[in-house]
Image (cartoon, rainbow, N blue to C red; front, side):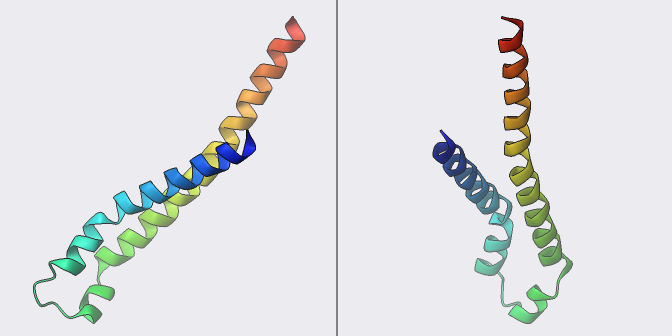
Amino acid sequence: MGHEHIASMINTLALAYIGASLPLFLLFYFGGGIPYWVTLNSAFLAEEIVRTLVGSTALLLAIPTSTVFAAYAFSNRRAAD
């Protein structure tokens, strides 16, 4: 069960990163002649980096936290039986 749990977390994290960074990829692709150094120093790029870090941290913490809550709820239910 643990391997599927980790694989699911990695897939979710990858899809969340790709979805969050799609506007950045579109900016690089359809840049319209803007030099890359201007794009790299923009607030938009900093926002994407912060969004990726926050989203990754939230996903990495959400799965173990939900597992702990589920184990606690299951152990309380087993003790009542």
